[in-house]
Each structure stands twice: as C-alpha cells, then as structure tokens.
Image (spheres, rainbow, N blue to C red):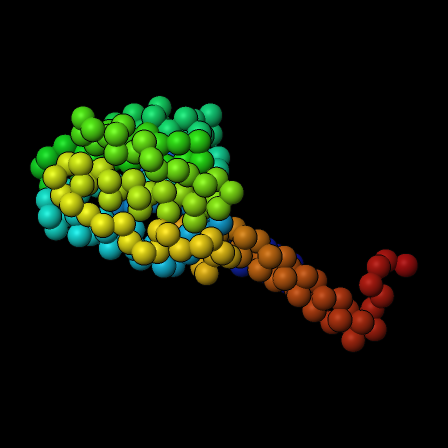
Length: 222
C-alpha cells in the first residue's frame, strides 16, 4: 500500500506544471507564447491582468508589440536570482533569449519592458524612454499588483512617446487591495501539490494500520 501511495505521489509531481518545478528562466519560457509574464506569488489581481493584456493586444494590432516581464521576487528569476532588482541587466539577458522566437508574426525589433520592485529595465523602447518613465512610480508595498499598476502607466507612456497614443486604463489607478486571484502566473503548483501528496500518504498509512487491526495483528512487532 505504501509503495502504491508513493508511486501515485511521483505521478502527481511529474504532472505538475514545468514552470513550477523548473529552475530555468521562467519569463523566457512564457514570453514567446504571450506578451506578459506575471509573478507566481502573490498573483496579480485579475482586473490588472485583463487591463495589461488588453493594452498589449491593442498595441500589437497597431504595429507596436511589446513584451512585459513583471518580477516580484527571486522566485521569478529561476537560475538568475542574483539579477533580482537589477532590471536592466536582466532585460539585457532576457532580450538575448527572445528575439529568435519572441514574435514570429512581427519582423521588427523586440520592444521589451522589465518591471521589478527596484525599477525598470528594457530594450528598444525608444530615445525618449527615460522621459516616458520618469514620473512612473513602483509601489513595492503593493507587491505584484504594484508592479502591474506601474507597468500599465509605463507601457502607456512608452507607446505614446513612440507615436502610438495610449490611455492608462482605469484599473491602474484603483486603490490597492487584496489580490482577487491572479491570471498570469498564479501560485506555484507545488503549494497545491505538496499538501495533496501529504494527505495521500497519510491516508494510505491510516488504511494500512486499520487493516492490520481488523486482522487482529498488532501495529508494531511484539
């Protein structure tokens, strides 16, 4: 019975999302398929995810596609924890990993914005990027939601300075509150998987003990 429970636990771990178990570079894995990478924990509130995804979709349709990476903690850095809160160095690394696969439908240069509690980084955001970002503040106390709000303001201003007038969504100015559930990354799958494994093992052991008692055998050797 114990062997069966352990085998089942191994299967559950094998089925867990690769992003939760890998130790590579999560943003570089996610951004080829979508325009924004969101922190795993805490998750970004759904209205903010919808607002940023909608803005990036609109800009893509207008011919100015951007990739945005929000990194709340070293947990989002994968194999590069030393680059946390060093947004420009990480942007340099991330941009080198993306160009060949980041956007097969767009042949222009990659527009990349990196947002961390410690500041912004980016590649190919225009000559006026510093002017665009100057008034944008990152409220680190708001954690992942603070990064998303800053990204909404930053993307709108960068696009506007690049000739694509973009309004800041109302969600960016909403008062900070508890996250209503994330969209981009969500909590690590291990947070859900490990307690489940523990319950399965405990249940298997309990069943094993009860069967021994029903057979009249002691729980431990005499």
